[in-house]
Structure formats: C-alpha cells, structure tokens
Length: 226
Image (cartoon, rainbow, N blue to C red; front, side, top):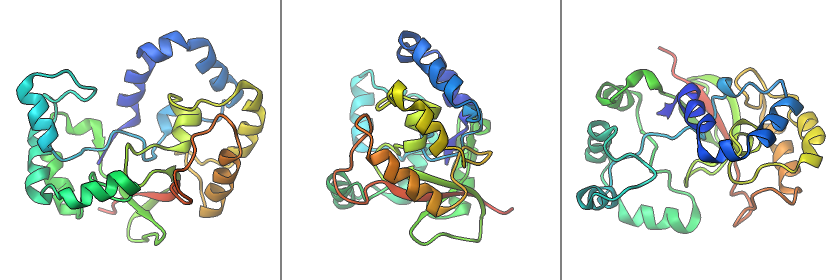
C-alpha cells in the first residue's frame, strides 16, 4: 500500500532540500519535460509499514523522527498483529536488502488495513513482483530499485523527486534520451527497457551504487482487478 504521488510531491516541493535547490530541480524539469512527477506510480512512495518495537520505544520516549509516529497508528498496529515482527527476517533484510517488511500478503488484508488509515484517500493498493511477474493484476509498468530497504527507486531519485543521487547537469540530455520510453505512469513499459536504464544508471559517477550485483531489482507495479 503506497502513498499517492500528489501527497508526496506536495511534501517534496515544500521541503528544505527543494527550497535550497529549486533552480536545479527546475533544470531537471525543463530538460525532461515529458516526465510528469504527479503521474509517478512506482515503488518510492512511502509504503505503509507495520508498527515495530523500535517505533514503540521511540513513541514512548517522545522522540522526534522522520516518520510522524502519531499517524497511521491503527493501521500499522493491526499490520503488526497480522504479520508479526520476525526479527530473524529483519536481520537478514538489514544484511542483504532482501526482506520487504512492507509487503501485505493478500488483497483482503490490504483492504482491511485501508479502512484503518487516517486518510484512506491518500493511499492506493498495488501489487509488486520481481523475477516472476504476475498477470492477475493490471500492470502499470516496471520500476527499478531496492526490494526492501527504503524502497529506493532509480527513476524517482533521478527525475521525479531527486534527493540522494541527483543527476549531473551535463548528463541531462543523455538521461532524457534514455528515459524517453517511460509510459504515462513514469514507469518502463517492458523489463528490457528497465534493464537498459539500469545499465546506463550504473555507469554514471553520480549514481547510487549496488552493494551486491542485482541489488537494483526490476519490479513490476500493478493494480488489483476489482
């Protein structure tokens, strides 16, 4: 379950990072005008995550965190009840970026959690898959990024909401050409298109690097057929 792009872009646009780098962000927008950030439907959209023991401790201590712990408590606590908090899997995830704690394992569970959200209208239920791509849902396209971790997306961090590894201005023309096949959801239409962009991205000195080969996964994003 992911935040809708409008919600995230409003936060991004008013962030201190963008305020300090507004000219550069606009330069990216001007160089790649066919990318409409509000249409982005990829993985880097703050997925709902289950409540955790760490959250509980920080909340009880009144700590300030990046995530507002007062929000989505009902849904996140119910998510924890359903999934549990598997520390063994979490430790594996930290070492290998393989365990995605935000995955909801059934559509019925996602619908149950959606009812508990503070603002259900700010979220959408999507299906994500890697390696074996599902055809039971309505595909939106293919993103590239971490399967676990912070749901980092190469597309999002390059041109939708640049934050960690923004492109070098000298590469914007090539970047625009490489991304020209993006569809209306700012995602790649085929696995091959996504793989070609991954190869290009990894060749750039400004890009994030993989800790191990294949860490950047091609991930299909789809909507449930209801």
